[in-house]
Image 1 (spheres, rainbow, N blue to C red):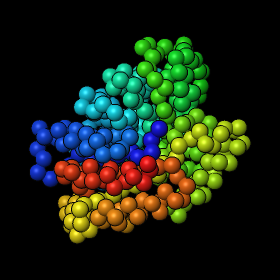
Image 2 (cartoon, rainbow, N blue to C red; image 1 turned 180 degrees about the horizontal axis):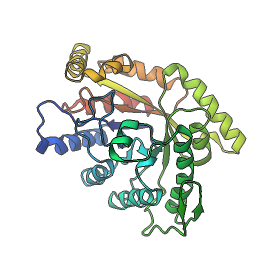
Image 3 (cartoon, rainbow, N blue to C red; image 1 turned 45 degrees about the vertical axis):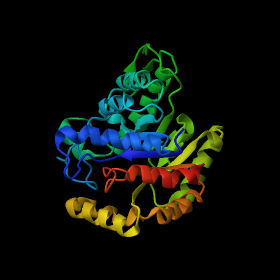
Length: 316
């Protein structure tokens, strides 16, 4: 289960040519693995998100990238944060995640959500639909995917999907944990309580207690033991050996990536002591762990290691 996850959300690194892009990503994953992170995530998007850059910034397809990272790591779990359900038929997604589990030696995890980036859907021809449409599709998809990952051959004649005796051979090497991303209290957290092993919240620190209460209420109503579900919160950090260095690296990132200015206030910035103190406050809210991305300086050698070494003791 994820308690300390490192997410790689961007592939635009100053001074890094295209032929050095993948080695830079590998270096981050390896630093994460060797410094205490238990899971490495990449985003499942085809265009860069508006709060991280421009649509035509580099984005690598996530499952191809995760399978490649499996060959350069040995311990960390590998997952998207999170898969957009709208981008793949659920049977294909189940097969893809199973393939990742096989090639990684049993380290795959499924992160999944309903999908939200309308521009990406419209540009690339994926049906977007309404909010209700996307959540109906997600729920049907979970019923199919969970059955296939469990070694069953599920059939479903649903409103959104139809499958008959959907086989998944070879089976996963181990039980693949399922994480549902998002913080919607009525739909998303109900699905977490009903289907998932993990919840990754996207919310402000002040909202965490209310989200946890909502999840507990869904678990009680559905007869689920709340303690079976690991809850993490998505965060952004920029750590460096000194506070001045961390601030300078964040400012340089915002200067070259104006779209990211909106993330300034939510990014935890500072030296290791300052960053650790902020994360200790977050963990005190009752969550089980955190997922962290470092778009400002994750590409700088040693920064992911410093981040892991800073945060791992908080979860020991």
